[in-house]
Amino acid sequence: MSTVIKGARPYGEGDPVDVLIEDGVITGIGTVQAPEDAEVIDARGQVLLPGFVDLHTHLREPGREDTETIDSGSAAAALGGYTAVFAMANTDPVADNAVIVEHVWRRGQEVGLVDVHPVGAVTVGLKGEKLAELGTMANSQAGVKVFSDDGLCVADPLLMRRALEYSTALDVVIAQHAEEPRLTVGAQAHEGERAARLGYTGWPAAAEESIVARDCLLALHANARLHVCHVSTSGTADVLRWAKDRGTKVSAEVTPHHLLLTDERLATYDPVNKVNPPLRTESDAEKLRAALADGTIDCVATDHAPHAVQDKDTEWSAARPGMLGLQTALSIVTETMVRTGLLDWRGVARVMSERPAEIGNLADQGRPIAVGEPANLALVDPDAEWTVRGAELASIAANTPYEGMRLPGVVTATLLRGRITARDGKIG
Ligand code: DOR
Ligand code: ZN
Ligand code: ZN
Image 1 (cartoon, rainbow, N blue to C red):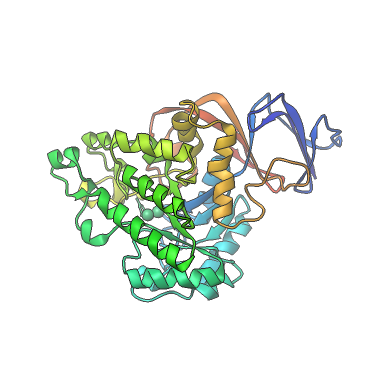
Image 2: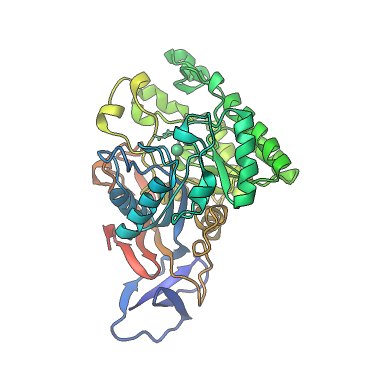
């Protein structure tokens, strides 16, 4: 089985070249001799990137298959240019044991559109009381590489310390949803002028920054790897800069929505804009974009969070936090980072593929586009635009904050180990 991508520009650089793929591996770049029966993708000068890797996806299987399944979420991922996603543990039942993580891994392989790597819970039932059996999950068939109680913070410093200490022996990473719960009781929106005016209880920046500072110190002393989920404030970027300068093994992600959207959206009262951590100020968004560009924040992760209509389309305080992200991530990064000149396509490859693959310890993802490398690839038309329609996205849920927006950057093909998983907006 072979495929040839004709006239693509790897990393958006240089003259168009042909890329030959045989048995899942790149076997030729330049002017290639393709077998007659090879499948042809005419790239017409489009940008070829390593397939994207999402460190932070909520698929709702098991438990809320009315909002997303491994099947529907995998389709959304493939259409978004992803070849691997990490599925968060806050399912029902929680992914805190080998049975659940092996189910998620196996189901992902059966669907076959994207590698679905289950994230294991740090604590039993996400209760923050007792460590889950990290070793059993790491050594299971699912080979869990990332552990997180995401949705909730591992708030107890002693538990967090123990988790970090164990993680070193297993060579895994602890991903923290940084939110000091005592500081966010009843919080509904970013603590600031806009929330105050609307009468919403505020979610202060310090609730995030204080946990990130604490965890960086714990990680440094344990010589452990810490990953900070969805950085939302400029102060967190400052803490990360400081911690990295001191040699802390800390990495961090920012979501597309925190790069583009701000708490100005509160004025709409539309809970589609409710997310945790909340949308912050324009100044925060600007500093997050700069921190992503300079490497203080390592990568983009979607925090793709599907929710049912009845859980979103309700009064603000009752609505669940979270928004879809897999199919719009590349476009938002194009808008906020590429069109602004903050990142070139090489930089996009770094933040959407290479760094997340390194952080998640995936040997076959985020690899160079070169002969002998696995053909995990995303082809992007940088000049095309599209209009987002929640109902047309592959997710079962439709809670996109970008409804009706015209966005630049279209994923025209995705290949997983040489197999076409998405093409021209359709699966396979
Ligand atoms: O907005 C969010 N949604 N933040 C989280 O931490 C959890 C997530 C979800 O599971 O819906
Ligand atoms: Zn979270
Ligand atoms: Zn999340």
